[in-house]
Each structure stands twice: as C-alpha cells, then as structure tokens.
Image (cartoon, rainbow, N blue to C red; front, side):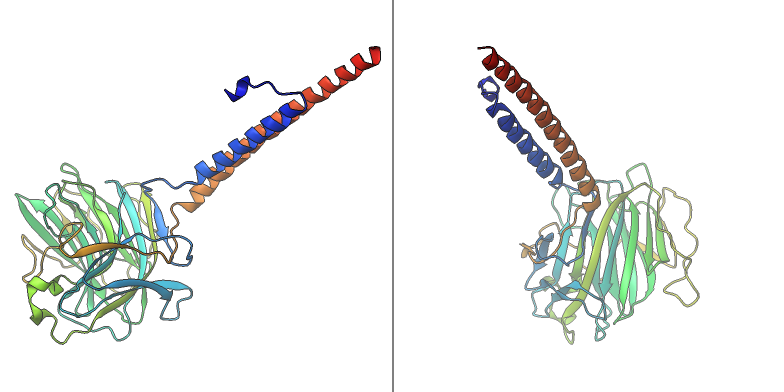
Length: 369
C-alpha cells in the first residue's frame, strides 16, 4: 500500500531515498547473520562479546576462560574435572556438521604437573548420536593414557563394536600441542579415512570404517572426559588421583574435500611416532602404527553415553569468541551492502533529476502567467 500514496515532487525523493536506505541496512544485517548450522566454525577464546558452544558436564567440572599458560599469548580455555567421587566429564560440544569430510584443528596443553595414570583421559571425541538414544562408545577418541597419546577408532561389525587403538607418541606436559584431524566419515558401502598430525608432523592414520553408519553424523566434543571416573565404576579408580586439568585453544573446523590433507612434513627421527605410509582405502579398517584390534573395549572402560548422560547438564559459556566462517560472511556482507548502496544511490540520483525537471516546468508555467 505505501506505493499507492501520492507524494509531492519535493517529498517523493526523500521518502524513496529513506526506503532505499532501509533496504541497504536490512541487506547488510541479513547477510551478516550466521547460518543456523554452519559447517565451518572456529573459536579463539579472545573476544568476550561472543559466546562459545554449550558445555556438557557431569558433576562439577568447569570450563573457564583466562590467560593461556606455557608462554602462549592471549586467552585459552581451562578445563577441569575435580576428583570428588561424582564428576567425570567437562566438554564443549559442537554439532551441526554433515557426514562428509572435515578438518578439525585445535591446540591443547597438559600442565607440567600432569599426573600419569594407567587410565584414559579423553581430550577430544567424535560422538555419533544413536536412533535409540542408548549409550555407546565414541566413534573416534583422542586420549592421553599413561604418558602417551593414543587414538581409538570404533565401528560396527556383525552387531559388535570393533576397536582399533593407534599410538600417537609420547605426551609432553608443559608443551602446547597443535593437532589436525582430517576425517572423511565412512558409509555402509564406502570406506572412510582419518589422518592425524601433531605440530605439523603426521603421527597416525586409519583407513576403512570409522563410525556406526546409523543415527546422525558424528559431532565433536573437546575438553576432558575420564570414563573410569563414572560413579558406577566405583571409588577405586580415583584413589590417589589428582583433579584433571588441561587447556584448549584455537578450535577450527573446516569442511573439506574427501581425501584432502594438510601440508605436513614426514615424521622426523625421534619424533612422536613413526607410522607406516597410509595404505589405500579399503573396506576393512587399516590403521598405521602398531594398533591392537579387538571386538570389545579394554576392560574397565565404560561407554561414553548418549548426548546427555545421566547427570549431565549443558551450560552456555558466555565469556569468549565464536567466529563462524567470518571471512566468507564478511565478503557476503560487503557485496550485499555495496549492491544496496548502488541501488539507493541510483534511485536518489534519478529522483533528484525528476524533481529538478518538475521544478523547471513549474517555473516556466509561472513565468507565462
């Protein structure tokens, strides 16, 4: 209906220019809005103006943002699980990823007083939600066990969960590790792949089935999780153990082309690990290194549980940055704003010309009379 309103020659340009300016602002704000389920996300923990993913905890664990340790500049997230007989998990949860190929990058740091235990502390896991909501092991999990890093990969065969354990080299407390995981998820008829680098060096890989091929695509969890600290495991697993404390920083998840990987150098002598060359994809899982493969998990390890295990709550961390594909959105915003500005400017110039012509004709009519 606004188009049906008759305006005087003097009022029409201002009114239409205002409408074009409003369109410009709407275009800019719409283009700048993040997608509901962005497939490329990053978190650098530097800005207090944007929020982080939800934190899933069991018990009284926490994720707090503060100065990064170990001489690293800027901020980092401090994750802890207290040894209180109840707590066993404190993680950031990132969902909304598809079932294709992604590169997962992040940095983590074990304090210099990290206590070696012959039990797993999972620091990153990829978890597949199940149709029945039942508890099941993560499809991929990075953990520190004793004094070493290891990767566990799970898949289903004949109704049984299979497990491959891939050694990734010695853990170095007091050192920031930069991890990259290039993952292509397998499907029922197509093998997948995993390649792991640490500090720019390839330390492990896996070819073949790498998930359960049911339910939603695996989502990403990062933080700290001690399966053997679950209350049902009994207090003996906690005796003599200190709280679990570690730091994480620079999380970046990018959608990639299947089979692509980072530019990395070969493992140097005396490095974290000396894996063999990655074999060609096959239907049967083939990890590098010297993994053990068994139809069941190690004794004493409990399933990771569903998205919300008993006692687990989700908390929103409000003190840090979220950058969801920022560079791409900036380009979209810029293009939308420039286009809208050109439209507004053109409309204004055109209307000014029409107004000038109308004023000239009115002057001529007044002169004749």
